[in-house]
Image (cartoon, rainbow, N blue to C red):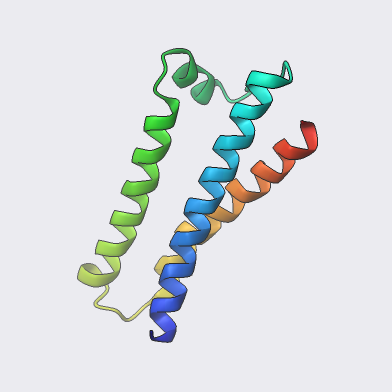
Length: 103
Protein backbone atom coordinates (compact mmCIF):
# COMPACT_ATOMS: atom_id res chain seq x y z
CA UNK A 1 0.00 0.00 0.00
CA UNK A 2 1.44 3.36 -1.00
CA UNK A 3 1.68 6.41 1.23
CA UNK A 4 -1.19 8.12 -0.57
CA UNK A 5 -3.41 5.04 -0.22
CA UNK A 6 -2.68 4.91 3.52
CA UNK A 7 -3.60 8.60 3.83
CA UNK A 8 -6.80 8.02 1.85
CA UNK A 9 -7.86 4.97 3.84
CA UNK A 10 -6.98 6.67 7.11
CA UNK A 11 -9.12 9.70 6.31
CA UNK A 12 -12.09 7.52 5.40
CA UNK A 13 -11.59 5.43 8.54
CA UNK A 14 -11.53 8.54 10.75
CA UNK A 15 -14.76 9.71 9.08
CA UNK A 16 -16.53 6.39 9.68
CA UNK A 17 -15.24 6.05 13.25
CA UNK A 18 -16.23 9.63 14.07
CA UNK A 19 -19.70 9.19 12.64
CA UNK A 20 -20.16 5.90 14.49
CA UNK A 21 -18.98 7.24 17.86
CA UNK A 22 -21.11 10.36 17.55
CA UNK A 23 -24.17 8.38 16.53
CA UNK A 24 -23.82 5.76 19.27
CA UNK A 25 -23.13 8.24 22.06
CA UNK A 26 -25.98 10.49 20.96
CA UNK A 27 -28.40 7.56 20.99
CA UNK A 28 -27.10 6.39 24.36
CA UNK A 29 -27.48 9.84 25.87
CA UNK A 30 -30.94 10.45 24.48
CA UNK A 31 -32.34 7.03 25.34
CA UNK A 32 -30.81 6.46 28.77
CA UNK A 33 -29.93 9.73 30.42
CA UNK A 34 -32.70 12.24 29.73
CA UNK A 35 -30.47 14.34 27.48
CA UNK A 36 -31.70 16.01 24.32
CA UNK A 37 -30.27 16.90 20.93
CA UNK A 38 -29.52 20.60 20.55
CA UNK A 39 -28.95 20.43 16.79
CA UNK A 40 -32.31 21.38 15.26
CA UNK A 41 -31.66 19.55 11.98
CA UNK A 42 -30.61 16.31 13.71
CA UNK A 43 -33.50 16.57 16.18
CA UNK A 44 -35.99 16.96 13.33
CA UNK A 45 -34.54 13.94 11.54
CA UNK A 46 -34.74 11.94 14.79
CA UNK A 47 -38.39 12.85 15.24
CA UNK A 48 -39.31 11.50 11.81
CA UNK A 49 -37.06 8.46 12.25
CA UNK A 50 -34.53 8.96 9.47
CA UNK A 51 -31.54 10.42 11.32
CA UNK A 52 -29.45 7.24 11.07
CA UNK A 53 -30.21 6.79 7.40
CA UNK A 54 -29.31 10.39 6.58
CA UNK A 55 -26.05 10.08 8.55
CA UNK A 56 -25.08 6.94 6.64
CA UNK A 57 -26.08 8.49 3.31
CA UNK A 58 -24.02 11.61 3.99
CA UNK A 59 -21.02 9.53 5.00
CA UNK A 60 -21.21 7.36 1.88
CA UNK A 61 -21.68 10.41 -0.34
CA UNK A 62 -18.77 12.21 1.29
CA UNK A 63 -16.48 9.23 0.72
CA UNK A 64 -17.75 8.73 -2.85
CA UNK A 65 -17.34 12.39 -3.81
CA UNK A 66 -13.85 12.55 -2.33
CA UNK A 67 -12.87 9.26 -3.96
CA UNK A 68 -14.16 10.27 -7.40
CA UNK A 69 -12.84 13.82 -7.21
CA UNK A 70 -9.37 12.62 -6.40
CA UNK A 71 -9.31 10.12 -9.24
CA UNK A 72 -11.13 12.03 -11.97
CA UNK A 73 -10.81 15.74 -11.39
CA UNK A 74 -7.39 16.07 -9.83
CA UNK A 75 -5.71 13.13 -11.53
CA UNK A 76 -3.97 12.00 -8.32
CA UNK A 77 -1.86 15.13 -7.93
CA UNK A 78 -3.24 16.62 -4.72
CA UNK A 79 -3.74 14.70 -1.50
CA UNK A 80 -5.35 17.71 0.18
CA UNK A 81 -8.70 16.24 -0.88
CA UNK A 82 -8.36 13.76 1.96
CA UNK A 83 -8.34 16.56 4.53
CA UNK A 84 -12.08 17.03 4.09
CA UNK A 85 -13.20 13.56 5.28
CA UNK A 86 -10.43 13.56 7.90
CA UNK A 87 -11.47 16.90 9.40
CA UNK A 88 -15.15 15.98 9.32
CA UNK A 89 -14.46 12.65 10.98
CA UNK A 90 -12.16 14.23 13.56
CA UNK A 91 -14.85 16.75 14.49
CA UNK A 92 -17.38 13.93 14.86
CA UNK A 93 -14.90 12.03 17.04
CA UNK A 94 -14.54 15.07 19.28
CA UNK A 95 -18.33 15.42 19.48
CA UNK A 96 -18.61 11.73 20.37
CA UNK A 97 -16.05 12.13 23.15
CA UNK A 98 -17.89 15.22 24.40
CA UNK A 99 -21.11 13.20 24.40
CA UNK A 100 -19.39 10.57 26.56
CA UNK A 101 -18.50 13.24 29.11
CA UNK A 102 -22.17 14.24 29.29
CA UNK A 103 -23.37 10.70 29.84
